[in-house]
Image (cartoon, rainbow, N blue to C red; front, side, top):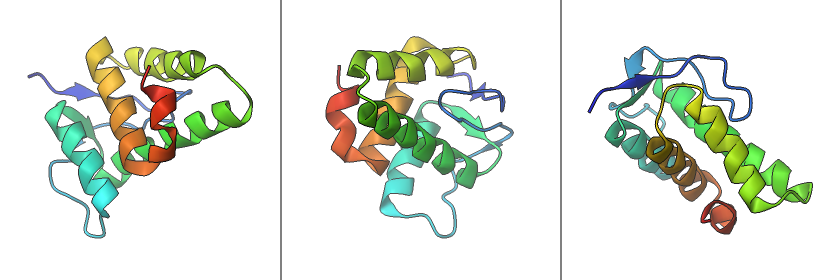
Length: 116
C-alpha cells in the first residue's frame, strides 16, 4: 500500500503535516495512542512525529464533541471530517477508518456519532 502524506492545511480535522512514519510508538504513548497509531500505520499514513498523529486524533474528537454540543446531525459531522481528510489525498475508506479509529481510541463516547 502506498503511503499517504498529510499537508498541514486540513482545517476541519486539524490533521498535521507528514514526513516520518509513526510505526514506532511515542515514548510516553498511552494505550489509546498505541491503538490509534496502529491504525495510522496500517493505513500507510505518515506524520512528522507520532505526537502529531495523536494530536490529529484528538482534534477529530474535538470536532465531534463540538459538533455534537452544537446540535449538528451526526451525518454532517462525519461528512465534514471525511471531506477534510479527502482533500489531503486519502481515499474514502482511509478517511472513514482514520476518523473511526480516532474516536474509538480517544473519545469512545462518540462512537455512535461516527458509526453511521
